[in-house]
Image (tube, rainbow, N blue to C red; front, side, top):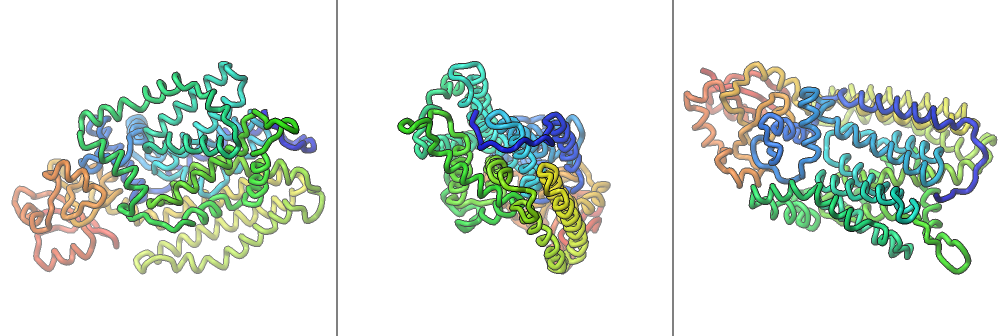
Length: 571
């Protein structure tokens, strides 16, 4: 176990009550999963893939709108399909995997930091991650990023716990197998980054600290056997069943995504910096001091001549964060969720910052560093009120009213944050109490801002249009998507769409089975005008609908909003 500088006794820290509190917060965390409708594109896409998997009974080949979809491995879709089977279709079921894995990371952080350092550091670090705005948002959003981030973090926790266990002991072997298993599940969640990134991080750690002992304690034979036994079967069966899978998944989706601009997700070199600053906003001062502590940990000395053989976990956490940050910053493909794997390690470093700095200052002073930090955020939330008119003016004309409503939700969140900071200031001399209030206030702000986004997201989800159209769905007739790919409506209608003159991300699947789509609008109109198409549905944007009306295309309007129109072919 590594040691931190001693701090004065804290009689208010009672691990039993903290454990119960985190269990209660975990229940609330999961209860918040269903307050919003699904958003395009990720939430609708992965929910629909899982729905189709369950509906068809084909758990091997991921399909999206009936087309082969080989961009990502199936672990999360399997978990989501299982949630649908157990609990039915719904928003919280679609987000359950993200919610559970985000909680898993928090609990693994608490456990790991408690074992390597002190229980108080573990629980404080968990509180930091729990209240980090980006972690909350990602934990309540149905995408693959949270799942892979959590599993990668579990692999790091397993490595650190194994390296701090007695050499050749049962705990060492168990935790290393946990590490290998987590990496295998990460690969099944999002691909090769599940093992490539942890491998790069360990190499960089060893070079920068000149500590190579971990490589001798990896339990290579058992670990590799476990790793390949978990992730090989699906890849082998897919390659055998679909000859085009190997090239598309391993070459196109990995190397070309990293080195080219094909996916149109280009961002500047500093793309992730604002996300880190906002995502860990409440704890940036603590992070600074934690980074200093980690840097000192790099050259831990056991005596004047020989470097310590003890695994340097703080330095490892810093290298983990820096390496992953640099890796994705160099990539030509950037999305906000890519940076999530570094947040648990940053939370641990921020917890160390609290332990090393704020517990050593005189908190009885009127303006201690902690008191100044709380005062800063009191000012921050007050200034936030002046930005509310800008929120209300965001968006296009058709969205204006939804953003006005969202501005009211933001106002409620700011009010809660301001009240929380004032109470935290009042209790600033009771450090643990103050920091709990501070953290829970930011958690509440994130929750209210996230739930309030439904005022904007309901329109984007297309839920209301889908519910109006659902009574007209004829499951013996197709649902056409004309020059459009709707990501959420197929899930809500529980019906695949046939794409018309639009490929987008389904280009690969269309290439494999070109008979499943209609390449031109003229061909679609020819099919639509056939008497056999009576009862079929078609989705399109309003401009396409107006064009069809001018051409006197036979269609009955059954549902519409400002973003899309759904029509039916009359009898």
